[in-house]
Length: 202
Image 1 (cartoon, helix red, strand yellow):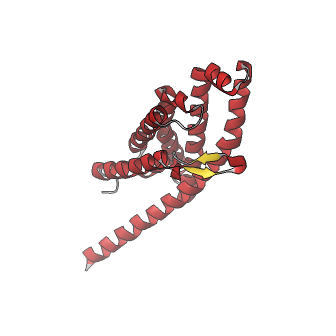
Image 2 (cartoon, one colour):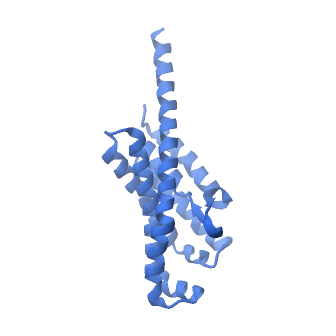
Image 3 (tube, helix red, strand yellow):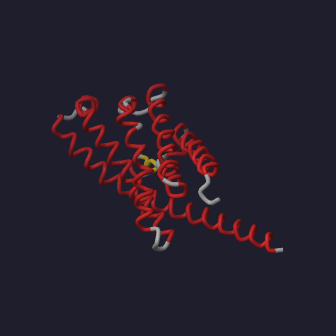
């Protein structure tokens, strides 16, 4: 069956493992201008939601969030990484990526499937950026200001600027990766189904 519970579990487990690998290695980042990096760690969450629904997406999002929180606690890299030990920053936003991605994919699913998947990727990617930055602003504005040597009043503008710069590019990257991967996966499933049907007719 196309969306059997076993298939959902296997898909969520496999993409959850990919999410962990991306979170603890440099594979989750793409080099960008000025020595900065763009994250693509939310893409397995989006793909899980598109392929197997919001529950699978939420499970992979939970894995992504918990891995991010643990990494921030035991092996922080940047000066702001310790802020991700707060589950409101590291976990909660990642639980909603799958829900948003699945909702967008379902909305456009009757159209061309690759475009629907790309739209889900874009909205899922931007959801990750906006919610994480939003929770940082709500829970850690003073810590960010102190770490960066800025005035508290300047933090909202800083976060909005990051959302518009990195966030839009990360959303575009998520759209490209999600559209390509989902299309390839659907093609493999279709070919496997056609092959099985042919064997049954023999």
